Length: 156
Image (cartoon, rainbow, N blue to C red; front, side):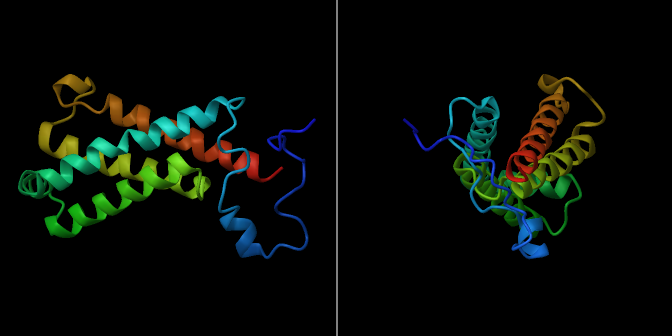
């Protein structure tokens, strides 16, 4: 008896698919909530970790604007808006498994910008409790792993 969760082995990038559609990939990751795939839990947790960051930016707009300006991300309102947009998109798409190959790359890119901002405001430091980037590096590398997994899974 099938539960409908098994991968059928059908390629999503066959000869009937346009090159653009093959590049974009599936809108919904195959088996995106299957508990048998550990990367699903990693993806969902990465997405959920964005929620408090979006909330903090929205609830402390003045402090967020000051941080962005101090980091040299000018105009600060534009960069704050982009951060809120990218983090909200990553939150929804990673949790839901939507466009995961690209949103994983977006998430990694967010972490690169965040690491730059930390270096610009706190100086070069690794340890997160002292304003370092170890957490951001971990988050970025896991985002790349989620993206790579989505490319692998959707190209079968």
